[in-house]
Structure formats: C-alpha cells, structure tokens
Image (cartoon, rainbow, N blue to C red; front, top):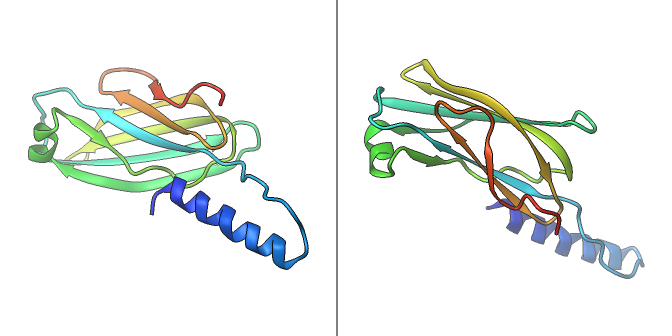
Length: 145
C-alpha cells in the first residue's frame, strides 16, 4: 500500500474514532512522503546493485531508516537507462529532512551522498540522486502547498 493511501485510510479511521468519542470535524494528518530516484551512469560496471536510503528530520531528530530498499540487476537497470526508483517512504512529518542514499554494485560503493529537502504535509517530494553528483535535485513536491 502506498504512503498516500495509508494516510487517507488513517484520516478515515481517525474521523470514525472522533465520531465515536463525540468529537466533530475531521483533522487533516500532517504528513508528507518522499520518493528517492537514482540515475546511474552507463555502461554499468557491476552485475547487481543494492540501494539503501535513510532520512533524518533536522528539526526534531526523528529518523527514518530506509534499510535495504531494493536490488536490481545490471540487465534490469540497462533496460531503464540506468534509472531506479525506490519505493515511496512511509509518512514523514513536515519540516526539513536530510536524505542519504547509498548504492553498492557487487558490494563496491557506487554512490553515497546526502541532501536536505523540505517536506510538506499532503505532498510527495520526488528526489533524484545522480551517480557522480553531490546532493540531489527535487523533481516534484518541493514548493509549499
């Protein structure tokens, strides 16, 4: 289930809970999400690649350990021109987050960098990291709602 759908269900369940407790009105949950994308240089040098990410809210220190998010073979990545999109993050509280990405090719470090990005409620930020680059480029969801 994607992050946006999870938030929608939590809003619905929260509304039912509020009604059961005698409260009126629906309160919007203050969450956003992020999707990490990676562009590797062609030709690829390794047979398989592992992608991990993590995030830290710079305001309150909340961490979101991404762990091993996904793996891909060189043939899969070649078919996508070296592009790989990781799954959408779990819900993230609004604020400035530092996202880090690490890519290993057959156990060898291919890419490791971080970038800071503002996360807004009810928005998905799409962040693109590029092999050989530093930081990231925000492709979508980087402006206030």
